[in-house]
Image (cartoon, rainbow, N blue to C red; front, side):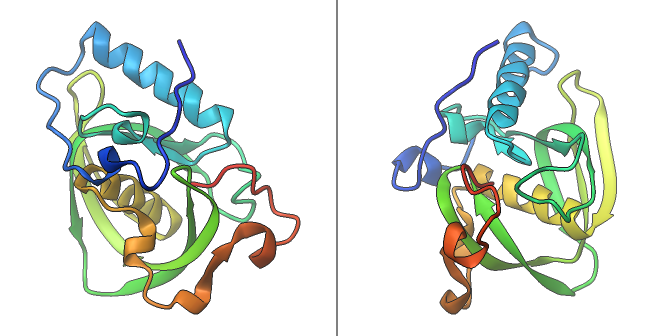
Length: 179
């Protein structure tokens, strides 16, 4: 396993639409997933998309096994590997919430997201995933899946008076890495 460099905003690879995963349950996918979890945990992330480490695949991981120092009030989210995800909003209600990103370190912004979603896809073994979620879980999934279509959260910020440096907005919060 290895910790990978996380690409930063400005790198053109973050703006591409990722390619579908053709073969799940392969040695290459299992190694990639292990590396992504190790990379995410090394910076206290809540999620990571393959394009963030320069891999052009529709693969995201997310989950918080224990309270995350960067999101101390957030509920736990099950550790998940999601290939070729599809998100379907349930209803039209949106919810504003603060987000950060490992590819946009040191900044946070208020981003509107669907309050409740259904997401489908496959795990690393090729088994189907079909979940309906809301709140922080839904936000994390939408944030990570945005990376697969070349979007970073600042592209979704509507009110730039609610966008700035984490250390200024939230003194004392662990701002060493944001996602």
